[in-house]
Image (cartoon, rainbow, N blue to C red):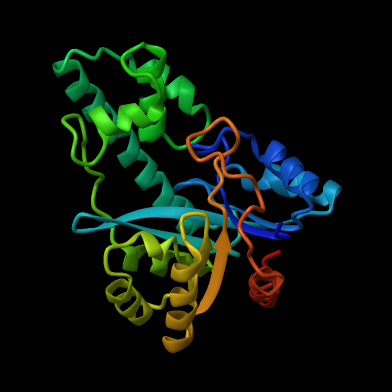
Length: 278
């Protein structure tokens, strides 16, 4: 089990554990360097840091910004910025407003198809975090329209399904730029899931990308090895994590289950310390 996990989601986006519970679980599993990387949301970082201080867990500020290139989902991870960064805060407020509007449109399509859901219930499920399709999926399960969230995505709200609504367009280059303006570093999330990773790596390296997430729960060993070679070739650092969303989620990967080398966490902590952001 690794001592580093730089990709974790909490109830501030689509995770099932609160920030405090996430840190406690990390400590229980002897994971000592973590990053909270909720989707388009920074609200869980202060709570996680407070918990980490008492449990001996270093909590790096993080975020996962969802972007699109054509039909590809391209996610950018940011690390090491101040959680109260005005420039990042303003951008994420806009992105979360887009998430809410997208949810409204998705519910309208579902209504047309005979699946009646109340926006208020979806908002309740999302809680204080950024709203997204997993919350719509949970509402569909609760209403008895599908058996589980996976079925909701497969039949109704997945990319090729009848109730799917695309996100408002936002470019990965813009995500990298705002992370840098906030004083952070930017890593390409789970590039092994992209159709042509090298095309994105080349393009985003030119836009200032700092690292690749080589270690990830969806990356087989051969993919990780290939990404490590590409990172070296293009002069990029590497990051890694489980992408755990907690035990009561569709991504119930245990914290620390991905073998991320200690040196990866130490590099990120070093970059953060250089910028005096911890």
